[in-house]
Amino acid sequence: MERADEKKCLHSPLIQISEENVYGVNRETRDDNENGYGKKKIIEEVKKQLWLAGPMISVSLLQFCLQIISVMFVGHLGELALSGASMATSFASVTGFSLLIFSFLNWGLGFELGISTFVESIALISYQKGMASALDTLCGQSYGAKQYRLMGIHMQRAMLVLLIVSIPLAFIWANTKSLLILAHQDPQIAEEAGIYAQFMIPSIFAYGLLQCLILFLQTQNIVFPMMLSSGITVLLHFPVCWFLVFKSGLGSRGAAVANSISYWINVLLLVAYVKFSSSCQKTWTGFSMEAFQNIVNFLSLAIPSAVMVCLEWWSFEMMVLLSGLLPNPTLETSVLSISLNTGSTVWMIPFGLSGAVSTRVSNELGAGHPEAARLAVCVVLVIAITVGLVVGLVLILIRNVWGYAYSNEIQVVKYVASMMPILAISNFLDGLQCVLSGNARGCGWQKIGAFINLGSYYLVGIPTAILLAFVLNIGGKGLWLGLICALVVQVLSLFIVTVRTNWEQEAKKATEEDEEEEKKEEDGGDRRRRNMKKKKKKEEDGGDRRRRKMKKKKKKKKKKTRSATQQSRSAAASGDRR
Image (cartoon, rainbow, N blue to C red; front, side, top):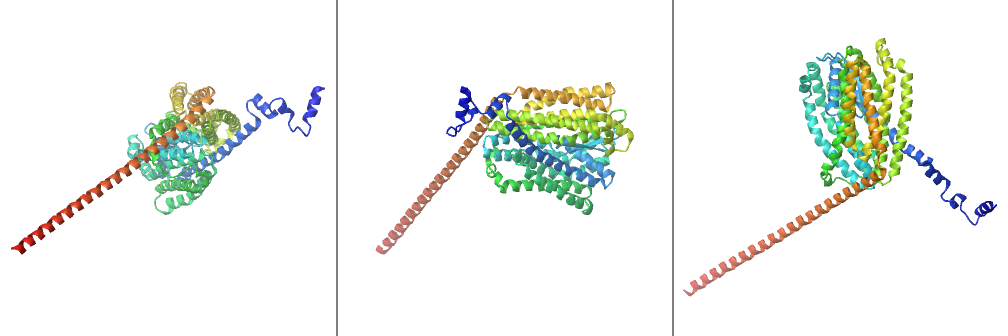
């Protein structure tokens, strides 16, 4: 009775409070406390990540199209031109381009090792991308901490480093022919590949700048302009490539030139956006000499990032080479190329999620919100698991017909059908490692990721693949199962590191690092201002000294003039007396 009376009183218009507030917090907050995270927070986080991931997937696919379009045009020039372009692109993928998005196409190339068919890689994300991914951590955490000015400095520093790194890579590309012949490749194909690679050299400088711009915008949650610029670039690439390949007389070299032009167009479009858009007014304040400072700190993240990327990519390249040593290399490499091409296309989805969670985690840690960062990781894992299960189911359902998209040979189609369930498992695991690696970049764990990748692929994956393929005679399936073993170790290792993370400590570390960086930049600015003042003072003092010297000289001249005048007068006077 008393409780009912109390409720009546609470509903009185004179007391505008709810029953929930009397007994503590409101129902929504109580649910949040009971369940860990409220439904609204979870839904909001899902929206944020999908908003970031969707455009990033589109950007990756559009950039991927540039290389595919170029190779398609070159393919109409003949087998030698196609082989040379494919060989050059594969060489670029190993020396300058490394895995984040990859696609493998099957071209017939002869090897003295006995490989009758070689699977060429069309790689769009470079070694530079690996180094540039340090901006995932630096720019993301600076944006979260509202240290906006630092973002522009980080980007300039990354651009400077990547331009320097591009110089030795350009030298390697210029000597592609000699290096391929040294690797016992066909001389004609090596010569064609060498010419193609030389004309691709301008693209490596543009690509490094492009990756810095993409990550600079991505960490600010600005993704749609990148999608628009990539779309415009692809639309322009069609006519440019057609003209340079077929009408200019350049042939296959025209496709390489078209790639370079398209990358530079994309760079210029994004530079114009950063320069003139109001969205980047706080983060881009113009060029600064501060970009030349703290380069060592940037390299401490950039080098492990590149190692993390390249270790994974080279393991896939090694699987391609090993497939050519199997008893039926033509069949094995054909099926492996189809499997990798399929996997790379599907992998675009977790790649977009990886960029999204990297941005979300780095932003929240920089802002000092550890719980929000933890929620972002939980949400992306659920999304990745859901996507992996759906995609895996689709791959299994289409396994009997998918091979016809690449070949009309029944043997190839049946082999592909038997590989699809294995491919579904590997894609599921690859999606998980991708988003966990994105979280690692957001937290700044690139060194940990590099060691995990080294152990997963080179201590577990490749030895297991060799054992299954060549000792137990499982063939190409054995190679793929070896990669699955590597992915299992990689996912478990990254998951354990993530679960054991002290998010409060990570947030504290991120905010302290940003404050320390800002303090260093301010101290550097103060030192430069003091040096400028000293220099100015010295110049002023020097000017004063020069003026004093000039006055002294003038006085001396006047004295000399006076003495000379007096002497002449005295001489004239003595003459008059005489």
